[in-house]
Length: 480
Ligand SMILES: NC(=O)c1ccc[n+]([C@@H]2O[C@H](COP(=O)([O-])OP(=O)(O)OC[C@H]3O[C@@H](n4cnc5c(N)ncnc54)[C@H](O)[C@@H]3O)[C@@H](O)[C@H]2O)c1
Image 1 (cartoon, protein in one colour):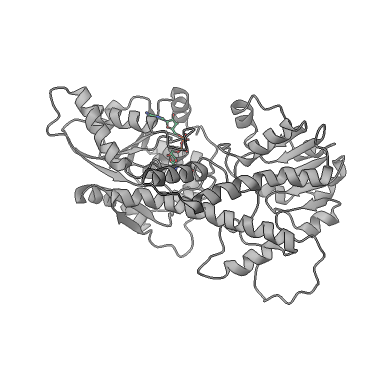
Image 2 (image 1 turned 90 degrees about the horizontal axis):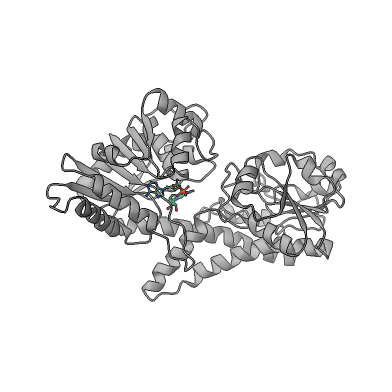
């Protein structure tokens, strides 16, 4: 099928690359000419594992193109995806201006040569499926004042669930594909488009193996409104689950329990599940905060105040501040202290800094007069460019970060940090204080390495050994 993807950010580029890998003919469109130029050279504008390989494979078979000119590819397309940003406005409402511009341009480019499906992949407030249809019609009308009889199209909502850092695997091997459609013809086009993913009958690309035992991906068909609501409900639940783990961690700290043991204990309950129960600095990124705000805003429009969603936001904000409190407990005065941040990206394996806890922590520490240094394996340059206002010292290695620091804070749980020589790092510091905001390290190992260690919800007292623990229960849940 001929597929157009509008917006070449984290979602659009991965979506385009994956559909091309599955054999569709893809054109990716963006208004950002610099991004398109890079993509034409085969360089993704974002850091995302395996994306460059997938783009190379797609380009080699002539299955993907990049352009700033939306008209010709939309005119030739069977399916047009909208994957533009929907950032939050100060009110919490989603900013739909990019979506509106894209939908109108699609309408202006359509003719009566074929039936097309316009698919909304951006996360949009409930009810936007209808809005997209209206905007496409308006765009059509503006371009052809004489009338657009015979131009046929359907609208679908196909929310995206990929996680940055493992976006390619998430797109090729999804837990589920959700499609809301305006009519059965539209739904049928979407079924055809997704047939290879549903059947899982394609060869796995290099470095991205199919999960063992996966034979199919379920396609959930829903109304437009339900599909939009599924996306918000999923993100609200995940954010709440992390918030719950953080609440439990805060209580564990006070009563002297070890939160990793508590989460392992509850995670084995199949009704709860083990993933997303890692306490720490809380969630960040471009989605959870914005989507919860947008859902609350929609609920409010219908006269409903969601107390649970409000609490999720508040618990998450408090977790970020908890780091400052822990540093104050250890150092008392932060003015003039040298604090090193291990990690800047909002999560590992991405360079995305949107709503990253690191930025909040850096801002607060700088306001309090501390000197802030940072190291991140991939996000240093992004931070330098996006936040020139922050007076951060950018370090090229963890050793440089640690040297003469009064404390280190683990902000992002990059895998490579796990294998650090903790004793060496501690020996380089002015004060070997480690605030482990992601519970990345084993407290005993950190203490043995000479660190004054504090994690999140961790029991500082020596535990009796051997403990009468049930065999086979992991001490820490796998990272989600
Ligand atoms: N990033 C994620 O992990 C993720 C996951 C699930 C869903 N989403 C949702 O997907 C959507 C896209 O997110 P993203 O992170 O990829 O955004 P992004 O900001 O990385 O990319 C958006 C792109 O759209 C382009 N754009 C804006 N207006 C345009 C127009 N009129 N025509 C062509 N291009 C245009 C921008 O230049 C930019 O390159 C959002 O609604 C987001 O909530 C994101």
